[in-house]
Amino acid sequence: MKFVARKLYYLLFACLVGVAAAAASAQTPELEAPRALAALEQGLAAEMGVGIRRNAPLAIRLYCDAAITGSAEGFFRIGRILARGPAHLRNPALANAYLAQAVQLGHHGAIDYFDESVPFAPLDGDCSKLEVAPITEPFDLDGYLAGLSPTRRRVADLIRRHAARSGVDVRIALAVAMAESNLDTLAVSPKNAQGVMQLIPGTQERFGVVDAFDPESNIRGGLAYLRWLKSRFDGDWPLVVAAYNAGEGSVDRYQGIPPFRETQAYVRRVLFFAGQASRPGI
Image (cartoon, rainbow, N blue to C red; front, side, top):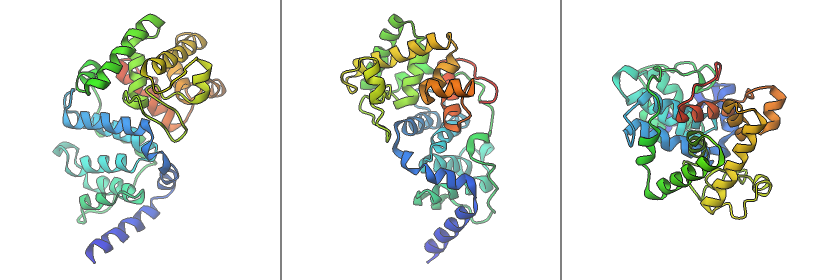
């Protein structure tokens, strides 16, 4: 009975969270999208120190990128760190709020981390404004890639080789592939984007990709698109990355990086992985 009461309390609170929870709930089908899964995998590497140094604030930021897409697991992992992570990051009241979001999205295991001795903290929108500590260290791209499986390291080597020949910044190319699928050659999104570079069928046809699940063909297609966008936006990589995510039409329409939370988080993450400075406001 205590478990049921706690669950009902969580669900009641989640209903009161308001627009932010409703918006996240509407995106629940994106939970298994490769971009969300990639952010979760990268966040876990930062949290556990796999290939890169342990960095809980970075883990929270990456989990937030997943949460922005509506990932219950992303909300849960933020709440878990705030509840039981490093002492200087703990915030039980805020942890309760993120855990409640996770429960509202169907993550029943989050209930076990709830601290009944403290109230819920209010959430200001979603986690995009959560700054538990500044990220001061550059991302160790080579270290992260070295910690992946041999199969994914081979994919990274393909990207390095073809990017160098195609005129696309190698680190940008790797960062895009990491943000899109975390180098998963079989990834398929709910919108039918496919393979390492997550190419939709129209983009595959446009750039001559015959087999989207052949990593070399997919990478060539993705790099051809990046090279075309580089020319289209005069080498402005933040705009190139934004267009890769949201389409060049959206970048034209907003005359810059579109004001979509997922696109802005995507651009920030790709530029961070690639070692480039982010634009103010994203």
